[in-house]
Image (cartoon, rainbow, N blue to C red; front, side, top):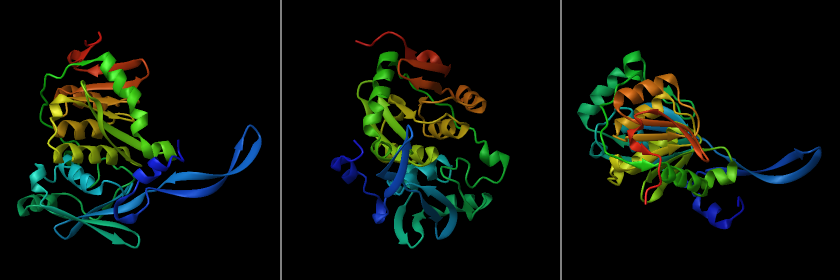
Length: 284
């Protein structure tokens, strides 16, 4: 599967930066040595520059970066609507990629309260926050009459791997997927950072005008506070994580009205908050 030419062709990255590299490795298995080619996920410094002023440098997979800029700007509270991202331009630099972002002057003035010129670890979830108030932001309550059966949830989970093309190749990247009860997985974004993958997906959702109350997000990671925060800030009502949630994530989800599911794997899941959106009989 990893050497499928269709998969390799589909992983073209922005501005020619590779999303993976190929390397000769020495592999040992059951005491036997072999020399083979391995595919390794790349991470690239991505500088987000707002109205000409550097804000943060993130380490990310160099794919879907315009969606990343939109999702990050929304979930960090830099802009309030997708329309407030006036323009994005990507520039190749010798040591990374710059994203020049134009936002309204009033939004840019609000950014002065945040720290600037910061470096974010891969998928940093609280980048740019210099105070507790900035970090622990309370989203508005989410609303929606989404109804999801356990069979529909399991169907989406079972389909997830076939959409994770970069992970099929490298085995080392996270994914965030958008699914609906009727259609299953509709879109998926991948990144070396789990927060980055979610921001890319949110960028796609908001750019394409998806009904965020009519579907749900699956993340191939734990459900930390920031993942719940990002989902709730754009109105998503149900978040599914492959691994465990944190206590703070559960409290935020409960307060925001968001249904939080963890340990979502084959034939199992745990509902932590607002279980009314889940039914446990197959939907005809």
